Each structure stands twice: as structure tokens, then as C-alpha cells.
Image (cartoon, rainbow, N blue to C red; front, side, top):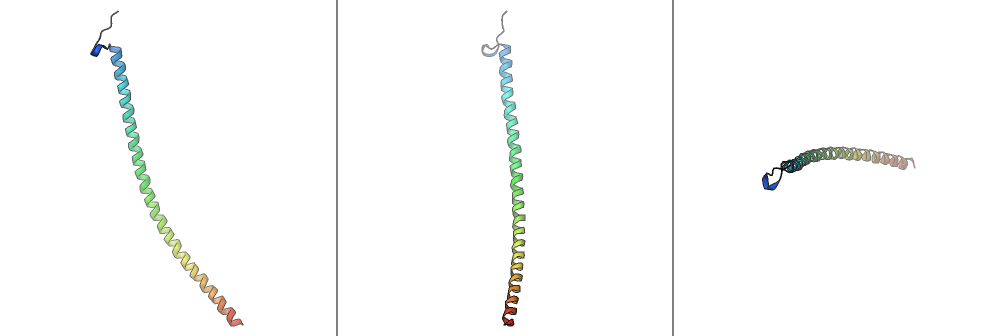
Length: 90
């Protein structure tokens, strides 16, 4: 049985094996590129969500700070009233 040689002295089964190997490498490379693109999209979305939540948190913190200042002023006013009452009682 003689094997027919083609390109560079390789027979048909060797050419098919090399073609399958190269196809497998290209397929894996394309799959990896697609996954990297998906990860980049997810990363971009996470960054945008972080910026949005950061702004929301800043607004909430400003509201809490304002409420805290109002409550502190109210407490101080009541403490002043108590002090005035105690001074007048003497």
C-alpha cells in the first residue's frame, strides 16, 4: 500500500490533522476574543453603575447631613431652654 504525498511530503491524513489542529486553535482564539469583549462590556456597565450609586450615595449623605444639622440645632435649642428654666428656678 502506497500513500500519496501532497504538500511538502505530507499525506492526506496528516494534512487533515494539521487543518483540524489549526481550526481548533482559531476557534479557541475567536471564543477567547468574544469572552474578553463580554467582560469589557460587563466592566463598563459596572463602572457606570458605580458612578450612579456614588452620586446617589453622595445625595443621600447630603440629606442625612442636613437632617443631622437640623436635629442638632433642635437638641441645642432644647438644652438652652432647660438651662434657662434651671437658671430662672433658682
